[in-house]
Length: 386
Length: 157
Image 1 (cartoon, rainbow over the protein chains, first blue to last red):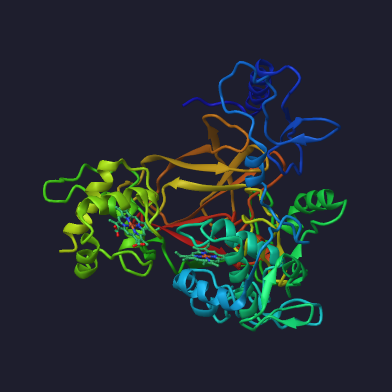
Image 2 (tube, rainbow over the protein chains, first blue to last red; image 1 turned 135 degrees about the horizontal axis):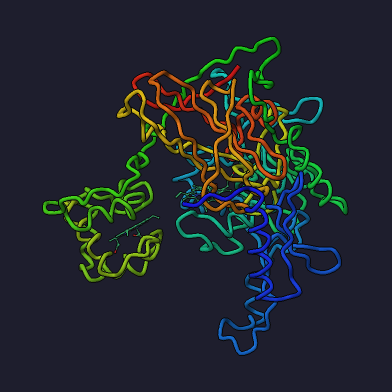
């Protein structure tokens, strides 16, 4: 451990940055802005016309360097999938509320609950009270659980989300959780339609809550969500960037900031007239979390593995999250009949499926274990289910 | 909220009923890692010289310093930074303390070179409320009993 005086540290940073950069390219110099209100880490790299980035980007010639290649037009097209609130970027396709209902029941309800009502620990997608006050604010979103008696604000698509196209892109890219990108565009439109319908929303005055209602790109772009204006700072229009900077620069007002009082400090944030601080115990300690977080921060002592199955620990780390119960459609460890059924196809096939993936089972359960380690975990799962 | 990374979890719903969006900065923050609930002071004897250690960080720039309070935020004293101090990086701090066996409310408060100071729970709550999932950078308090047990509490008025 060595100690550095602050002044020298800052100097050191500038020197370190500029010397590495000088080696990489003499035209890009990292400028360390130690200024009030910096919001991007204080380090900026000028590009062109006064534009800058917060990260250094590589300007070196790639000639003769063997890494990567220029992506093909098709590859770029496959990556270029974002969609804007006005619907631009959405793919062609369509799907009905009725089909969405079936797909939702089969692929989403286990986690998000029937009709989008929310499952234990999983986000609620529909429901909640959309009523607004005279200023256009969704009333229940003002609930803050500072004291125990208040209901949590419900953040569903109908009460909270500002933009409907996000629902489409989010589902397409990220859901269902265990195997994202498995839904076709038509299926995604169908599920999006179903969730919007469950939230009682309409398009151009047309009620969506009808199995035959068909959603497509044009209609989705027209859906106006109730909480459209519930977010700040403003991110639209030519001044958006400056607005956002100004907003995040005024921290005391907008995001909360402290003061560096050194003695006899009174907490300025407390309710008026009350200066004596109260010590509040935290109601839920980390140890209440299941599975509990690790406590020992030293390396754990080597366990005597003599009596323990060699795959047990790895199973608990990598597989138990889905295999402890059958809630995810996985054969639950301990469920004898489920495993007898699974093993009918032969052990080799079961090994293969767990390595290559099958349905909701990601390849190797999403872990980076070796084939042999996976087999050991499967052996343990079978052993523990006899 | 037009990107997949910013769904209902990543925006900060405030008491006004409106939420802060595109809230990406990792604000100035710190925590004392020794002592802490997992590594307490039960084995100390009165008179022992002990190093209070912790980590500070800020996404706005570079940690400039860390103050320590033993009385829940009424009085503060400067800790020293140790090791490398770089922008947007974990920064270690340290304070040598002579253990006197008395109960205390131990806190750390970091500040950075773009003029941010860690807020108290009250200061943070007054602006962003309590419903945001992230962006919780209020000063953390460890309550240390006369037995050297350490637990997490909040100082509120």
